[in-house]
Image 1 (cartoon, rainbow, N blue to C red):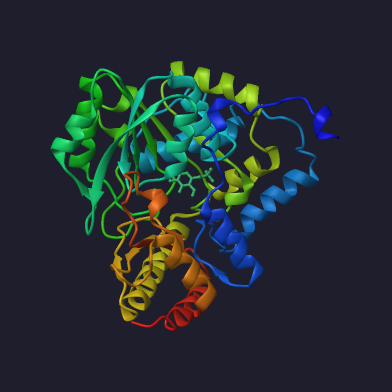
Image 2 (cartoon, rainbow, N blue to C red):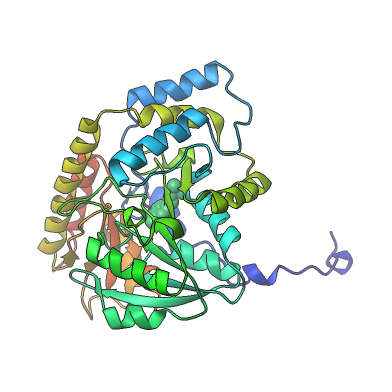
Length: 391
Ligand code: PLP
């Protein structure tokens, strides 16, 4: 169309600052050069055969139509059982669970159901920046609480100061992407007490709940003060290596889930039907599957940490999830983006700059986030390649 005839159009204000991230670009470049991608949090582990078979069978059996907007009742029942046994949270599968398009879809619906423009959201930094960018689009603003290495503790004073009358929500991601912080019961009690004092919602992102090393996972919704005000988000993406299947869930009080489902219906209708059957099979896998996975991730964590130490990086050993935040110190690279780009070109290993995960300007400039959710042989090769970096 001739430019003169093009109607004057403009984008919505809410997307002016939204862009796809360096992470996606580095992944694309990694693919272009046939590198090893330790940037995105996608596990390339094989999906357990019985899980694949259940999804195949659902397709073969023409389970091709919309499911209930809340998800298959059998799946919600399995989630409720798992939440009781593993998380210590009692939820009613009929009213308190929404199966969604990934836990990202759960977050989108929860955010739309709970946030108004002008609301404040307390978030911990470093953290999962998708949340921050998403609630900014809804007109909410962030109150940032720093956590600092090596153990990623926050200051009680800073946390208390982040809450005020405008606080609508606090987001707790445990284990945390990117630091691997596993919040202790005491920390969660402290956060729950503040949320209660200021009558704020708690959003608990527990997508890495099964991947912990030294300390066990504690769900904030299992604490009495937090029970009624917490929406727990999770899903099978990381645990069963099905990030592309796009199944997740939100669980919490019926009053909130009812609205989450109304939003879910408007934007997605329901989560992919055959994949819900596959995930149902995943949830019936024996405990030994989870135990073995946890042990293997621990070995992988240690392997990557050793490789990073050998080239003079300081790996902050994570307590959970499958990333290491590694500090390469001042002077070695111009900044964290330069480090990620140089390492990719020099070794063919993709990592992500630390900066997007650090919400205060200027932080994270000497850090990289490196993912170890890879098959052993792939991670071994990546570690070998990283040895090309001079110390
Ligand atoms: N929450 C956190 C903290 C994550 O790191 C990720 C993915 O990297 C997600 C949520 C997205 O999970 P899902 O695949 O269930 O949308």
